[in-house]
Amino acid sequence: MMENDLIARRARLLGPNVPTFYEQPVHITRGAGAYLWDANGQRYLDAYNNVAHVGHCHPRVVRAIADQAATLNTHTRYLHEGILDYGEALVARLDHGLDQLLMTCTGSEANDVALRMAQAATGKRGFIATDNTYHGNTTAVAHLSTRRPPIGGWPDHIRRVPAPDSLAPLGGSPDAQPQAFAANVAQAIAELEASGHGFAGFMLCPIFANEGMPGVAPGFLDPTVAVIRAAGGLIISDEVQPGFGRIGSHFWGHDWLGFAPDVATLGKPMGNGHPVAGVVARPEVMAAFREAFGYFNTFGGNPVSCAAAMAVLQVIDDEGLQQNAAEIGGYLLQGLQSLDHPLIADTRGLGLFAAIELAREGQPASHEAGQIVEAMRNRHVLMGRVGRAQHILKIRPPLVFSRQDVDFLIDQLNASFAVIPA
Image (tube, rainbow, N blue to C red):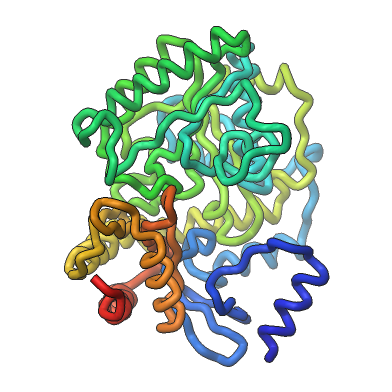
């Protein structure tokens, strides 16, 4: 079979442990809007990808990339207007004094730069993140993540605090969770200061996406913000998943949660699949970084990347995709809440980002979550799972998702749950 040939070639050329989705990987050959097609012409509804933010192969984004690539592509050591035009359009959508931009190629690079910004601004090197997070692939940000321990063990200048949780909330109840989270951050800050590293900053996804979007509400971070401000550290908001209108009610996750970051990082959705990412910061933070580090990124902010990113902003506006995320997201959540199965412990959503938490007798139902994901793949719907125990179904489609797409998704979920034992 062609798929088996591809898997064998991957193993030979790419080495071991290169992950694929699903027990039977999907051989994708093209995409459009909210759909992908495999090598046999079978269509799949994409309920997973935040990369193709405004839809797979959006013609305006494709044309912007092609036109600019046919005209000029260079870097920011030369003057070009693309990065300036895009920067003005981007920072106009941000508050809290976040009005200077540094562009990179990946969210990992953006988060790596953000950590160095915090070190430059504070003169300290210690960082805090949750114990169930992911912020990228560079050595520095991998130390914040929790997938596998680094060679030699976790570095002493990093502290991971317990993540908010819906099945087992910190402090014993949802009401106690904000203060309990802040108390753990305060303890981590004290440890970093006592160790001699000092506290430079706290990095978080404002909807706690990799933690399973555990149902926190606006204001959740307020006690933690007070603790961080008192200690003189920076707050870094990783907007790779919630940003660019996905949550519907707000363009940025930090504005929904209700805090003012010192730095925000951007990634995958920014270029609709083109490798472009960035960091926005307050001017004094950017100045501290520029003075402390000799940073230059050859491909960061190149004219083609800027053209792709500008086209994404324009499409979001012209096609009303943030409003679509709000409206269709509400319709999606309503449909998901209509699902009836004893394993469904909680269903929650923010715009076009939804989560279904599965549990049996109060314990994560990881195996069953995996069964649902595989069943949905076989029913031609692509989705994933997340959470500490991989027990939370994750639905995160392109922003062009429609009511018809939601109806199909709900029908297939009903059918998939029907064969899972209670």
